[in-house]
Structure formats: structure tokens, C-alpha cells
Image (tube, rainbow, N blue to C red; front, side):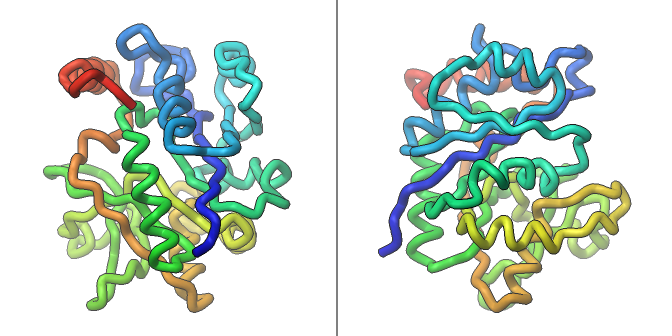
Length: 251
């Protein structure tokens, strides 16, 4: 079996305009700790041997808040989408032989066991890309997971680009992935910004993998709350309440 060593690549560049504050989203506090601290703890507990944080809005403040010796930072400026964000880590991961697990700095409830399950599922399937998915109650505006009859992932369609039929799909993209590192950066070279937002979508690596004859699979997690991003102050409050209710609040 391939090595299970992985780098955690954490997307933490966003401003979070719906948080009604100029503060970088990942510095907003949940139960007296910044959101990013939860994601870092999850990555470490899950076994990440390397951690790269993509910063952008208030990059210096984020770096100052997390002076940890085991962290490396890459700057995304301007911010042109999730695919563009990951591209900024190329120089730090160019020679990295392990897997890359892409995490979101605004998803503080993710459990380390879920990350380990994602990595194990990726390896067992021999996939190039494994997407962590879930099935939240609707209505919502998340990207949909489009599969074939064999359950293989064909593509991920952003909500704003989805057809009415695709919007009926229950399984959605959490924005969390496990990817073979060399493939990740080779695929990002092919990503284009020909969409309504003129952004470089990380989700496009799924179709690129399929065209290259590589396997793409979904790893479904049952607890949709665990993998939800924080976008508003109300969601921040609810996530804090959820964490307190969760046994021991362990990551």
C-alpha cells in the first residue's frame, strides 16, 4: 500500500464579507478560539506531517496569530478562486511525495477521524482525487456531486452553474479533498476561469482526472454539520453551541 503520509493544505485567505467585520474570517473566535486553530488541531491530530496555510486577507495578522514552528504560509493575492489558492502552494509542495489533504480554514467542527477516513478511503480505492461529501437538508447553494451509474464521480458542479436537474442531487461537495500531490499541480495547470465568476475552481480537477483516465471517488460523511463552513455570525454561534454539545468537544 502507498504511504499514508500527507500534507494538510488549509485555505484561509478569505475575508468573509458576510461576517459583518473586516477581520479575516479564520480569526473570528468560536468559544474563545480562532476558527483556524480548530482546523490546525484537526490536521495535527489526524497525522499531517506538513501543514501549509494559504493566507490572503489580513495575511500578516493571521501569521502573527499562529507563529507555530510547524506551519508554512503561502500568500494568495489577488484572490481568484479555490484553484488559484492551491496554486500558491506549488513552490512549497513541488517535491512533496505524499498526499495533499485540502482543508478549509472556516470548517472548525471537522473531526480528525474523518480526515483519517478520507485518506484511508483514497488509498484503498487507488484514486487520484477523493472528495469528502455529505447530504445536508435543502435548500442550499453547495456544489453538487455528479456521478455515473457505477457511483464514480464525473464532475462537481457549482450551484450557480448547475442545471435544474443537477440541483436535485442530494450529495454535495464539502470543499475538502485528498489528492495525489503531483497530479494536483499538474491538473491545476489545466484549470481555466471560463465560468460566471471568472475564478479558477479547484473542483475542475475532477473532470481533468476523469479525462486522464484516473479514478475520482466520493467519501460520504453522515454528519453534515461537522463539515459545514462558517459564513455568518449566526452560523458561528450555532457551531459553538454544537461543539459544546459534542461529547468533550474533542477534535
